[in-house]
Image (cartoon, rainbow, N blue to C red):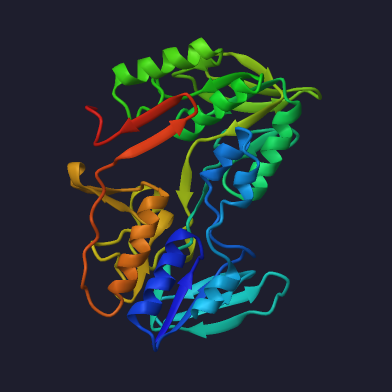
Length: 343
């Protein structure tokens, strides 16, 4: 049996290692366009907070370790097309234009996510930063070393953490959020208000219920324009507006759902029987809502990968659906939440 896994982050790695246990005679190949594996993006926050050693420790495995375990690692390889009808995959090396063909019996799609780009027009000269990779962390940290006045756009968990870190580093920080409350997808209003008062007391400027309409540049500053007419000059902008599933390779071949994520059943199987989707590219079933949503989190990715591997030949084990429980330590403040909001 030929098992192909596209993507070698948390879900892909867990799927590959579990597949080795379940099907020792199988040929298992992982494809990834990067030259490294297993980077834990949560380490970016600690790195920006001053724990420089964390970045190099934010990978828990290596290509060499996975090869030694028995996986065929095709790194620095771009998958250009997947043909689910004929079980074919077309790929090329990053430094080559020559396309090659690979056949598979079972496919595990673990391509992950990418930072959501702003939909507002922006000047190419403006300084914009996103947080996903190790390179992103290093570039953002270099920017923060000299910045005096920045904006963080997006009031989710990452936005709150980054804004507090920047303010603590002595940088005047403006946190802009389109909703009227911070962490509106996680907290009810009273808890949001408590968090907002804490952040205000630390010196961060909060602009809630504020829509950014344009980002420009005036030779000195990046200029943020809002729907209510404000013009906010800053040294640069850090975007924390969430992530989007990297599902384009399966577009119009499997059923897609919330935010364009691949819809999977309780066995991580897609609408195409021999294709499984795991991690940040797939949906998660939420018990309390009795519906699947796009909830990209590393803990779900680990479970997804193992469950998909177990069920490749037959539906043997269902995944435990999410209760939506999160714990976020932020220096002198810890946020913990579970379940859904009243709204």
